[in-house]
Image (tube, rainbow, N blue to C red; front, side, top):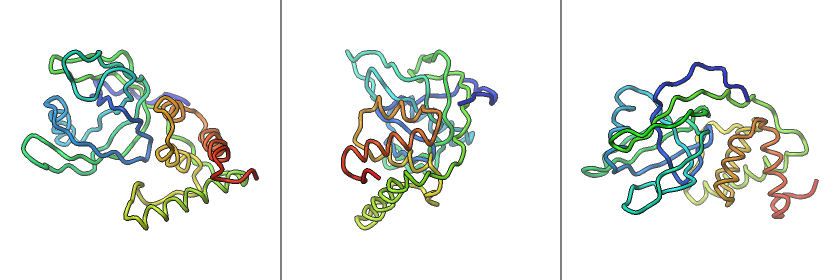
Length: 210
């Protein structure tokens, strides 16, 4: 996983109790002043913000809660839809962009975090190996079932022939700890990520041993 792109200076951060994967969807209700300002600025300047997974603290500042601590590797969030649901609240839909690695984060007086971030190269597009076909088919079946329930959790077009895309979408669906999702998101090789997903699904009996 190379990190050769020019750094992003003072990238604003949105720590969450979730992991955003490249190509994924993220829906937020924004009401804290620091994040309302963040969304307004990103919308005005057409710039992304960084989503990082919390490992201490809470998404909403509360008296007596531990200070926020979060992972250094996150994913850029690109604003897709912003609606003013009511006064002082925005409903935001974002798309996951490139991963990044942040330097030491700095907290402004208003509580907003930012960092100088280095972009991480996107996964190469690799076709899943024949041994992993069952995991691709299982995701296709899961998406079909979700559509039948009126749920559309992924952005089209679907990339069934892209191992990284299939692995990322499975990682979003699987009921695994956040720390595991973070490690999978950071993993260098998309085929290795899909293999780990395949092994998990096989262990749960979702796909066969072949």
